[in-house]
Length: 165
Image (cartoon, rainbow, N blue to C red):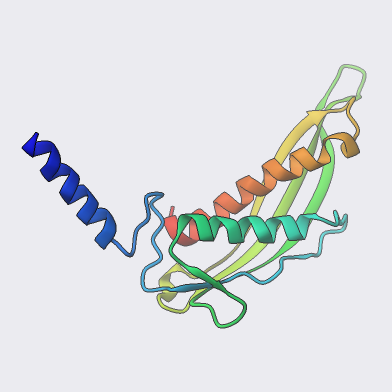
């Protein structure tokens, strides 16, 4: 019993004293704030709600998995981004040269700046896709696909900034 109490005590001490790492493995270093300006949609095909959804999902991820506070200006960390591609293409062709599956691809460009430690700064593109049955109209599946793709993109952006993979 004593051993369990000691292990629990040290585990709690380690968890409460650790201001740099979260349980998700995210490291924010000395940063205290994060700035996430609205991600503009600069893709040839514009989906009206996509920019807002990406921006809000990234903010939610930062708030739920780090100790950073969101600010409108002057953040210790800053995510600037834009939607650069929103495209539906055939993904699988049948014997009759018809699409059996279509693919929705979304690409974003992100510039991450960490004013407390510039070694983690990056500027890169992230791209994710989801396939859907060609018998389904894009209108019928679009919201679900966007939600899945946006989650994956936000995970990529977050991990590159704070998990350093």
